[in-house]
Structure formats: structure tokens, C-alpha cells
Amino acid sequence: MENQTGKKVVVIVPGTGGRIHEDVVVTPGTTAGELLNELGLEGFWLKKARADGFLGMDEEIYGSVQDGAKLEASSPAEVG
Image (cartoon, rainbow, N blue to C red):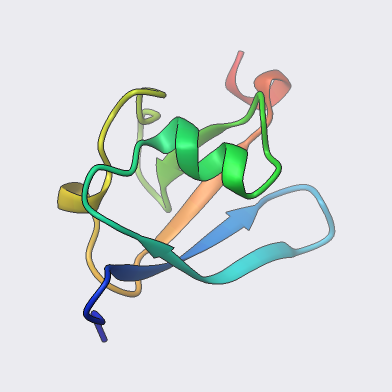
């Protein structure tokens, strides 16, 4: 459920033995790059789970995700 300060999302890091960041709060203006840096995933790329294409590092993600959304963080090797 969306809270007063933002939307909660789950960030999954495939290929890391199930590394998952749960209840990550995304607020208006948060970019994909900022979220990845906050989670210590510098150099990774972010996409919506089961979606084609990655979000741009400067792309604001609040408006493009629903509360409870699952996002995937992929390493550069998986992207390239």
C-alpha cells in the first residue's frame, strides 16, 4: 500500500543467490541511478520485472511504478 512519503518497491538482483531489497521507498523525483546508488548497486541497470528494456539512469521512476512493484537490477555483463 502506498504510504504518505512514497511507494514501496522490491528490488531483485538476479544471479546473486536471491539477493532482494524489500520495502524500498521510492519518492517523487527519485531516478533509477539514485535508487541503485542508495542500494549499493553502482554500475547496475534497473528494469521492471518481466519487462523488456532498462530504465535510464536519469529516468524518474516514481510515476512509472505502482506501489509494491518488483524491479530487477542487472549487472553490466547481463545488460551488454
